[in-house]
Every structure is written in C-alpha cells, then in structure tokens.
Image 1 (cartoon, rainbow over the protein chains, first blue to last red):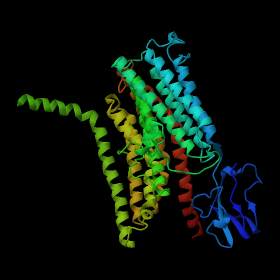
Image 2 (tube, rainbow over the protein chains, first blue to last red; image 1 turned 180 degrees about the vertical axis):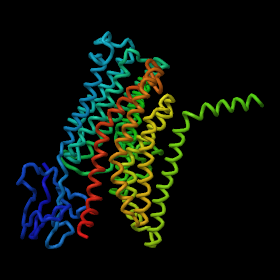
Image 3 (tube, each protein chain N blue to C red; image 1 turned 135 degrees about the horizontal axis):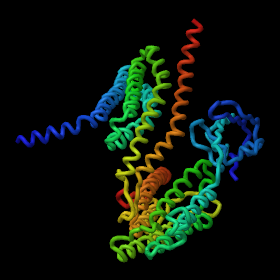
Image 4 (cartoon, each protein chain N blue to C red; image 1 turned 120 degrees about the vertical axis):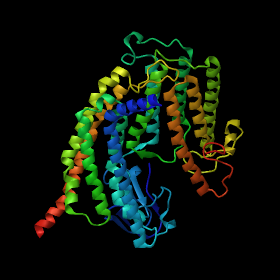
Length: 308
Length: 219
C-alpha cells in the first residue's frame, strides 16, 4: 500500500489543493509522521498525489522531507488521481478476454457463423496451429503477470481497464472471426510459409520471455530500483546490445510471425497498431534511460536496431 | 478529330448534372477552409508584431484555433464522408432533395462561422454575428443532420444491390467489409453524437449570449 512522505525533523507542513489552492491541512512542529488522508476511505493512498509544485511530478513514497527543497514551512500540493485499479488486475482481465474469445470462435460457438457450422472444426491444420499459438501467447502473458513481472507503479486510473479491454478483446474477436471462418483461405505458399512463420513466432516468444526474466532479475524483490539492462548468458538477451526495449522487438516479431502464419489482414492490422503503440512506449523508455544514466550505451536504439 | 470532339461532348454532358452539386460544394468548402486558416495566420502575424517575439504566440490564436478544431473535427469528418463516400460515390443520390438540404445547412453555417472567427480575431465582433452564430444553429444543425441521414438512407438500396466498396469472403487476405452495414452503423452513431454536439452549443449559447443580455439589462 502506498504511503505518503515520511517526515523526520521538526518543521511545519501545510497541504494545499493543487487546483483550488485551498488549505487542506496544517501540521505544526512535525517530528516523525506519515501523512495520508484516512478520514474518508474513498481517498485511499494510491489515488493521492502529493507534489511540491501544483503542475509538477508526484513525490514518491520513499521521499524524505528533510531532503526536499523546502523551507521551515513545507508547502505540498494535493491532487486526486481518480479511482485506481491495480496493474495486475488490469493485465489479468485484458489477457483472459482474448484467450476465451478466440476459443469461442475456434469452437464455432452458435450465433457467430451460419448455423450449419455450429460446433464444427476447420479442415485446415494451420487453423488448429494458429489457435494453439494464440492461446499459448496469452497463457504466457497471464503467467508472466502473476510470476515474472515486477511493477514500478502499483496502480493505474480505472478508466484504463475499459480502454485496454476494448482494444484487446475487440481485436481478438475481429482476428478470430476470420481465421476460424468456414471460408478461410490458408496461406498461399502453404507448408513452407507456415513452417517459417511458426519458427519466427516461437523464436520471438522465447526471446520475449527471456527479456522479461532478465528485467525481473535486475530488480531485487520488493524494490523499485532502476538499472541499465545488459546482455546475460542467455543468447536471446544479446539483443540488449542494439536495443533498449527488446521485449517490444520480440513482441513485434511474434505478431509478424502470426500474420505470416494466418495470412489474415486483420492480424496485420493488429500487428501494425501494436507496433505503433510499442514504438511510442519504447521511445519514452529510451529517453528516460538516457536522462537517468550518463553512461547509457550509445549504440542502442529504442525498438528496432539502428532504425527506430 | 470530329469523333474526338463528339466524344468529348458526350463526356461533358454526362458529367454536368450529377457531378455539379458535389463539385460546387467542394469549391465553397475549400475556399472557406482557406479563409479560415488565413484568418488564423493573420492573427499569428498580428500577435507577433504586437509582442515582438514568438513568446505567447500560441495563446493569441488559441481560442479561435480551439473552436476551429474541437467541434469541427467531427463536422469535418462527417462532411468529408458525406461528400466523398456517399454523395459522390452513389450517383443516384445526387439529385435527391436531402442533398440540397444538408449542403444549404452547411453553407449557411460555415459562412456565419468563419465571419465570426474573422471578426473575433480582428477584435471587432458585431453582436449580430455573434448572435447569428449562436442562434442559427438551432435550426441549421437539425436541418443538416436530417439531410445527411436521409442521403445515407437513400444510398442504402443502391449500395446493397451493387456491393459498393464491399469485400466478401473467400479471398486470400481473409478479410471482409460490408459497406451497407457500415453505413447503418454510421447512421446509428448519430444518435449519441448529435445530441451531445447540439446541447453543447445550447450551453455555449447561454454562456455567451446570456452575459450580453445581463449587460443590456443593466444599461
């Protein structure tokens, strides 16, 4: 649970609302104190943002008053971040959807296709393979959320879950509809194309997992320290030499593999949109690495070696 | 040579009737759009000359720019769509009265709106223009929307019959698109969108014209 800054010395503290500048509370001659608004349980700590400047960044849980640039009376600004939801909850919800939805199309549950196709299965073996790959991908994501990832922020705004689920669930339904359609056309180059696609897909799934594990090991349990990631003994992590966010690089590769395997335009579209979003995230992450670490390796690009 | 000329004549005759209305609207639309951006450009230059620097330039044109963009985005999208994807593409629809309805509504709205922006930027806004901007919409918005919906509705049977802009299965890209269903979804989207826009304008009206009424009462 998030708490607000610990105060170690004898100062006065006042807290103002960031928007209206109303005085919310005043503490005189503070010694050791943890401030948070427990009067109303609706205002749990995760949605409280306390900052030195009304438009500035939030202070972190670990910040100590003594080390902050404030005078004898410290003035803080309070902002309500809105209803929050934990990252784990969001990830589990947004990943379980595609898993279940795709399977519904695969098993041709009634009211999707013409009634004569209800509960039939496709005659193309690539359709079965695609279902296994898609399901594997989301099961992997669920397990990683539960056992691998270490999150910097506990929570995100509640409205994100609606936005994210619409994206993941919507696209999953759209792709699954065509791949499992009775009139589905298998890839032009047949077995060769499918085999190559599967190799690319599996390679990138292992790669993506390796990066997640490497990132997890950078950070001791319970801590929120940030370090520069480097290649490890695992060859799949050697891509760190060229790229800041290889997890996104491998993710792109996986979906390119899946697009090749299914030869389905909606899948290509989903890959493109995902790529755009991941590039935005990768550029942001790359920039914050550069800002935080002076000795950051200059050869690295955000997401595509030498290119992007 | 003779046959070429004759052929040219026939081609010209074919284009005259149906194409004219859409073309006329596009001409008006483009002239007006140019005027609008010119207005913003003039505003920028004036603000720069007045301040002597680029500092705070954005804030001088922020209001008209925001007006221009916010409500306009939806209107622009709906207009481009109506013009190209419906009226231009479905010839049968071009002689319908509904087309005249929305084109008239848009034209009058835009003339008032851009005059409003021009005068605002020059800091000389006649009350009449402001009043017109915030009052005419009461009739023009429903008129325009009715025209648009009727036009789309008129295009439906033709789209269904010819499969215009539609892609069916099976095909090697494993993709399909039904323009007919798409048009119906567009029509349905008017239900949440139009009232929001309309009531936003009504609220704006109360805010903008409400103050003026108070001042005139005081005098």
